[in-house]
Length: 120
Image (cartoon, rainbow, N blue to C red):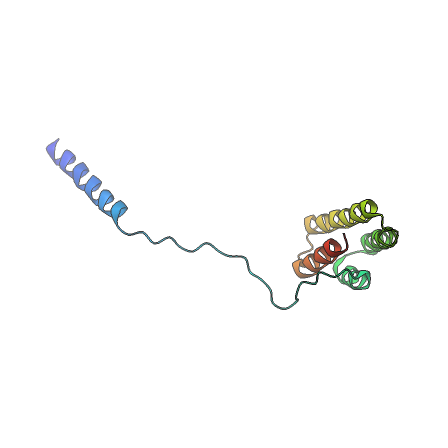
């Protein structure tokens, strides 16, 4: 009994010593920022159409995105901010469905989202 109590006391002592020592916290993984494409804050519907052509798989999704962006551009020209934003969010929903379907092109998805936000 004394032997197991001594072993337990020794184990507690070792654990206490380890717990009191200087602990270095490993750095958390930071966001990886890409310097390849600077983020633009100006609205350009023309640049969105080229990104859509590269990003969307399948002609139906691509055509839907182009139609939504065209509606967004028309609403923007008429100062209809509600419709402009609604159509922008509709395109973002299409992006989400592409991600769920396995489209791993995060660079174009990010560029398109940034372009949408600039126009919204």
